[in-house]
Amino acid sequence: MEGTKLAYDLQQVSFAYEPEHPVLSDVTLSITSGSWVSLVGANGSGKSTLAKLLGGLLAVNAGKIIVEGTPLLRETASLIMPRIGMVFQNPDNQFIGATVEEDIAFGLEGQCLPRVEMVSRVQQYAEKLGIQHLLSKHPSELSGGQKQRVAVAAILAMEPAIIIFDEASSMLDEQARGELLHILRDMRSNGDYTMVSITHDAEEIMASDRVIVLRDGTVAADVDPDTLFSDDALLNSCRLIAPYHIRLIQELERRGIKVPPFPNADKEVEGTLWPLLFNK
Amino acid sequence: MRNKLLFGRSIDTGSWVHSVDPRAKLTGMVLYLIALLVVNSWVALGLATVFSLAYMVSTRIPLKYYAKAAKPLWVLMVFIFVVQSLSIKQGTVLWHIGSWELYSGGLSSGLIAALRMTLLVSFTAILTFTTTPGLLNQGLSGVLKPLRKVGISAERLTLMMGIALRFIPTILDETHKIMKAQAARGADMKELPWKEKGRLLVSLLVPVTVGAFRRAEELVLSMESRGYIVGAPRSEYHLLSWSKRDTGFILSYVMLVAIIVYLRFI
Image 1 (cartoon, each protein chain N blue to C red):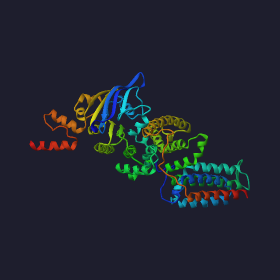
Image 2: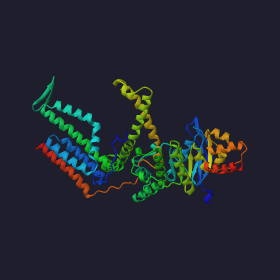
Image 3: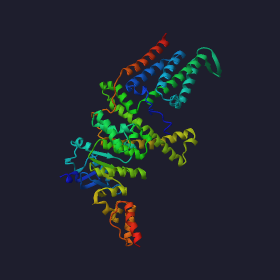
Image 4: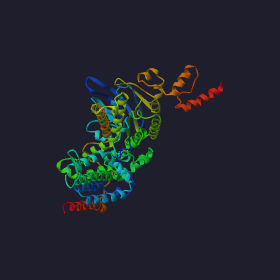
C-alpha cells in the first residue's frame, strides 16, 4: 500500500481573506507520498495562499485538508505541523538565528530535542547541504544562495515528511538556482520527502513529477510537465515559457524534423541532434 | 559597510575569555560599569586602564578593534569633555574667552570623564567580541530569569533582542539602498541644508518602517512553520555550565569596584 499513501487529500477547499474576494474556491486534489508536485499559475492565481494552507499557516474557510490521513484542524495542527516544513522566497526573512548553526538549531529547540541530538543533526544536515564551513557565519556574510541552502538545511534538520517550497528559487541568481534545483532532485531521488514547489522556473517544473496549474483560485489543469510544456495555450495562461530545449524540439518538429520524444535536458537534445547532422 | 559595523559581531580567537560563561561576562560588565561611573581621579582611571588593558590583551583580539569600537562615539566624547571641563570651576584659571573660563580642575575632570567613557565603550566591546549573539542571548536569559517572578518572560525578551540584533545589519542595508534610490532621483542627503535633511529623513523612515513590518510578517510565518509557539517549552542548543573560573572572573570585577570605591571615598 506504500505507493498509494496520500500525503495530501484536499476536498473542496475554499479560502478568502475577505468574504467578497475569494482566493481559492472548491480546490480538490490529492498528492501521493514521496512525489514532487509543482504548483504553477499567474500572479494572483492563489498559489501562495494554497501553499500557506498546505503548510498549516492559514485555516480553510470551507472544505477539508487531510494530511497523511489526519484532517488538518486547529486541534490537530500541533501534531501535523512538525511533519511539514516550508522554505520561503526571501532568504533574509527566514533567517532567525544569529549564525548558521543557531538558525538550523532554532527549529530543533522548538522540538525540545536533547542537545546531543541537536548537535549531531546540525552537523549531519550541514554536511548534506555542503555548508559545514559556514556554521559560525552571520547571515550578512552569506550570499543569497548560501542563505537559501541554510533555510533548506534548517527545514530538513527537523526531519519533516512534507516540504513546501514557496517560490524558494525566485530571488536567487542563475547559478544558485541551479544548485537549489540539484538539491531538490537529490531529495526527490531519495523518495523520503513529499515535495510541493511553487515556482515559475521551467527547469524546476520539468524536474518535478506533476504540475498543478491554478487559475483564478481553481485547478485549471493537473498534468505531467511534458504535457504542460507542449500545450501552448496552457503555458500562456500561467504565463510560463518552456525551457530552451523544448522550444527547440518544437521548432524542429514544425520544420518536419522528428526528434525522439522528451529528452530531459540540453545535453540529451544535443545527443539526438548530432546523428541527424551526419545522416544528411 | 559590513566591516564598519563592528557592533554585535563576535571575533573568535579561542582565548580563555571567550569561553567564560556569558552570564559571568554580563555580570562582570555591569560591575565594570559601576566601577567606571565611580572613577573620578587619575589614580583610579589609571587602575581601571591597567585592568581593562589586561583583559583586552588576554582576549587575543588586536587592540585596534577596541579602538574602532569606540571611534563612532568620538562626538559624544568631545561633548562630554567640553561640558565637563567648562562646568567645573576649581583650581586655577588656565584661560578664558569672554565669559567662558577654563579651570585646571575642570580640564582634569573633563579629560577623566572623556577617557573613562572611551574606556567604557571599548571595554564593553569585549562582551560582544568574545560572545556569539546566541550565547549572549542565552546568558541574558539566564541573568533575567528572576524577572519571571514579576510575570515577565525572559525568553521572550531575549528572543526579541536576538531578532532585533540579527536584523540591524539587514535593515541598515535596506536603508542605504533607499537612500541611494532617493539620491538617484535627485534628493541627495549630502548636498542639502540641515532643515531639508530632516525632512528627507522622515521620507526615509516611512519606507524603512514599512519594509521592516513586511520582513516581520514573513519572519513570523517562517518561525511558525519551524514550530515556534509562544510560551511553548523549548530545549536549549547552547548549554551553559558555571565553573570556578567564572566565579573568579566575577571576583576580579568585584575587586575592581571595591578598590575604586575605596579610592573615591578615602
